[in-house]
Amino acid sequence: MFVSTTAAEGVVSGETHLHFTQRGQRVAARYAGGRVPRGWLVGRWDGDILRFRYAQREDSSDIHGGRSVCAVEERENGRLRLIEHFTWSTRSGSGTNVFDELPPSS
Image: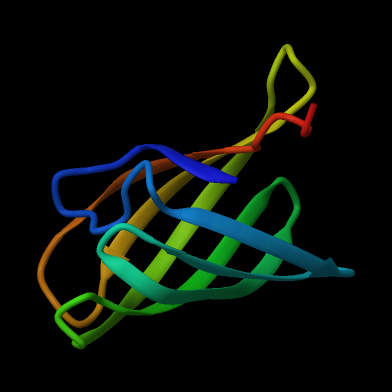
């Protein structure tokens, strides 16, 4: 997935790509790109909502994290979209990011 929209309080960008894995209700992702050399989401699928804790190392070498709740949508093209409402735990602020599934390689 890639970040298609980010909040002013967010650090991820269109250069950030996320790679998700799922086992039952457990969902995890690692991500990198732009101002985030490395980041992780760890959470749980709860009905039609994903709940995550996240931690990331930023290009400043600072480590920051928080929690998020994501709604999952299937788009008309069949790809998934996650709408993430995040709240920082290590700095002030919150906002909304949108992650879209990358199109298949041609």
